[in-house]
Image (cartoon, rainbow, N blue to C red):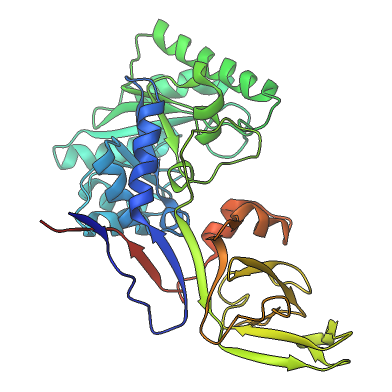
Length: 384
């Protein structure tokens, strides 16, 4: 039968827990939600948003994902070194000195200028290869790509190079997950204009893509051939207003254990800078996690979960420790589990909630949990 493997706690009593069983279920729900012919590209950059690129990529491939994407060459090489042979798209721009290695490892580059395209083509021809590339169209993000109203001549020139194959044409939404879709629709209009121009010149590609997670959820008219999703399989939505998929749940939790319990007297101060002074006798817990691990640097802000209840962070947190008020949780004891992000009982602390502490976004929080926090993976143990 199937059962969940017991957690082998790391040496440090603080860790990031990744539920691969839930990740598999999330991919199943996403595939059930999408149109049948629409393909999925799984973005696993920045260690799959802190979850572990190799583990997430393997789940994605098992679910039926046709393409992976990262940003840095190191990220791509890690996947290849771990036996992942699925096509990998490298976002952004590549310096010419990286092109040879990209060819050797069967990586697909975004190529947005004729100089790089020519260099890549020449290298490919020397090896007798035809290398796939994707061209990014800047439809209003003003980041990477060729401006939409200047794109066609560049694409036509690229199409002449014998060592590369124009496999994909892409763009990126600047704001697809908010209620107002005006700008996203303008970007889609510009992208469709480029696609139409390519059609008239009989320049065809296998993959046309513009949708990120927000576009996949809210802009079905922009789905085209393939959509790029990053945080959605992780159970995190890009905004509070985008469409929901029933049953999707978060995959990552951040946990720690109570390392010390202190009894405060009236007037006692807590933490650097003495930002907290007890107005009465208080009972506090010290937990060995801090801003050195990725929790925002705060003063008397934020909460954690202990025995299913919210416990406020008091004082200024340190690099390796935080103090929380547990006066209202008298049963709390040494080495009890504490949830810093995730669910305990009926309470839940989301990445969005923690992001508010530093006026940031959930992506920042997910990717910010540092490697000094061990990753513990939950998965099914197959028994007969």
